[in-house]
Image (tube, rainbow, N blue to C red; front, top):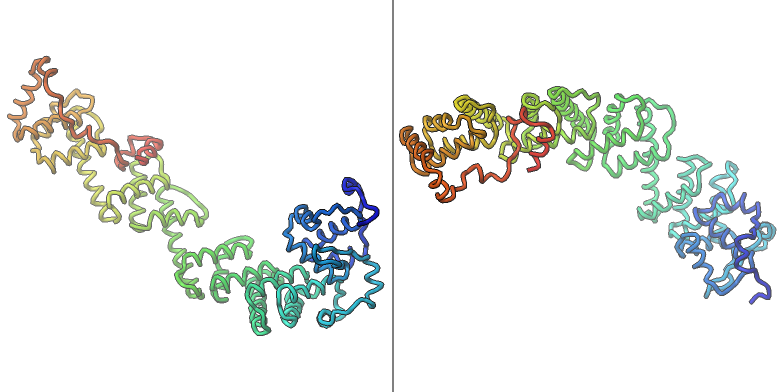
Length: 501
């Protein structure tokens, strides 16, 4: 136990001196987080404060790092000779003066494996770059912590020099080392294959830049994108070159836009490997589809400069079952019957048809012809009843029931129309009359008139004493569904409400 120590409360207001040699030689090459560990540990070491606290745990909480990360950082600084581990359980560390490390470097015990490795790293750079003290230490961490053979790490360094230049960042190189581990490239042969793919990415990315009219070297991000396209997504180089043609339509072609183009092509492909022929066919199909979308928009009177992916997906959803011609037929119906010509209204109409089993142009035309025929008959009946309108889905269902199910003679239907004059809802009144005649098996005008005369001449008391009238068909409709013939009668808000039913 020390005879003298610092009060814990004073730590916040004190200062911790840091050697310039550390800032110049060791800090630049240190991995992310390692400098925080060194400085925080140096503060504890310089303070002389000790209260039995688990300082590694305290460091973990304050710095927001796992204890394993902290211990790894301390091992790194041990390799740099700036920290000495003087006890294992519990662990204790001594921080060494940075200038003293420089002065005593020749007297410190040698680590033969590390010294041989460091000499090989220095030889790779020659006099083209002066390495910081911690850069070779960091590279050796990849050998000890990631279990990469020293030969593989030296290949990695040579690869970075060849692809990124002699001034590459060792922190960036560490990302490659981690990727090598994930690829399980623990042999020289496996690493060589990995680096060959990387070199191909640089060459391929440079060709893409040429196709885009950009005369410069590819960035790291662009090379990573090229690797993703070729390795992860399965595009061959010719396919990528073919896709570049799509970028001639934009003012500033770039890898980001090309990435979106290739992502769309990949999502529409059914094969794992995509060749230039696949891309060409897909793009040709895309152009044909875009022409269809533009024809559809033109029918609705919608002007749109760019047919984007979202609009194409919306169109594809509508055309999935019935195809382009059915979409166009629905669009023409919306234009004819609706005051609001929107894509949503077309989608709602197609959805209504689909629920009725109408998924072809032939089926839709037959349905529309039937609707028009029924509407014409309803208009004739409304003239007889001296009424307006009436061409609704409910009224057509009445007419179909009278004719198809009950097989009522046309003369009786027209008689019911005459008797409904002056009524607020003539079609419903007609339905009530015809329902009663159907129940009584009345088949001619004379019998119907007699039955109607009896009903209207029946005393009021007898009517009130009569049993409750049966629930007629129109009362059994709990809801209505959307119908194209009602477009001119309703507002867009009513149309939206009706389609929810």
